[in-house]
Amino acid sequence: MPSMVDPEEYGNAVTRLISAIELRPLGSSGETLSQISLPEDAPVDVKLDMTELEGAVVYFLGPTPARPGKVIGSAGPTTSSRMDAFSPKLIAAGLKAMIGKGYRGAEVRQALKEYAAVHLAAIGGAGALLSKHIVAAQIIAYEDLGTEAIRRLEVIDFPAVVAYDSAGNSVYEKGAG
Image (cartoon, rainbow, N blue to C red):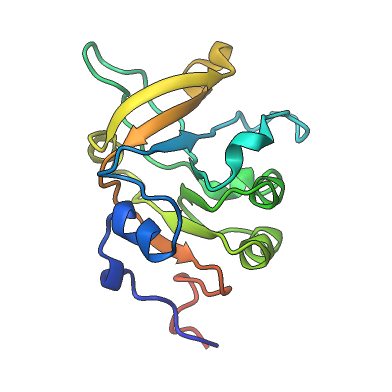
């Protein structure tokens, strides 16, 4: 099995990581990052505008309400496997990266390989710190869900590491065997 790309090589900033895997620049360029966080009982057939996913990055989170004068509240990652039922379809529609925490299922890992996408891990429990990298947030769907609404986020130097790469390697399995 090929060795996993060492996250240290790219630093912990999505800006450098995304550039390294030849996706559109994120971070200091001010490009956007979308957030999807749906309730656990959401139907699998939830309809999203898939045309907006080409080359996009999705961050799985359920932020806390923003304090006065802040763009967003605490914005730590949610467990990505909650989105495994949706992820292969999103990846097939052009999604190039996802950010969350924890393991991904076999179907998601296969879709990452098939469509040359990656899954990035953000540090759980660091939501207050991560929110400082979010400079704008705009609700784009499901406003009635409150903090669980879908938002378009603008980030700068968002810290994350490659958890699953497009060659099928996993940071969770590195050194195993």
